[in-house]
Image (cartoon, rainbow, N blue to C red; front, side):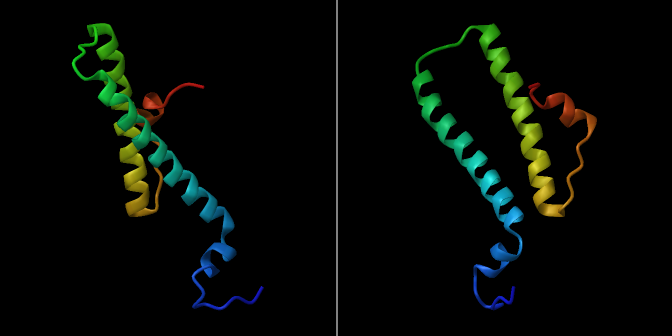
Length: 92
């Protein structure tokens, strides 16, 4: 396939799997942000019980670990899945 190098679609056409992965990451980040922005205001003027706050704090720790790995991967082009991250990821 002979593509014009000046065409902005050329990189996508040459590496469609990269484009799909990029869109998956953008979608995941967007969905997380939108969901949190939707839910947090509903908690206004409420104090969650200690056990529920502990669960949320645990989720925040896991989320930070995943975001740290994502940020490192974007900056270095290397994904190093270490034991800390594996422990932080939710089980399926």
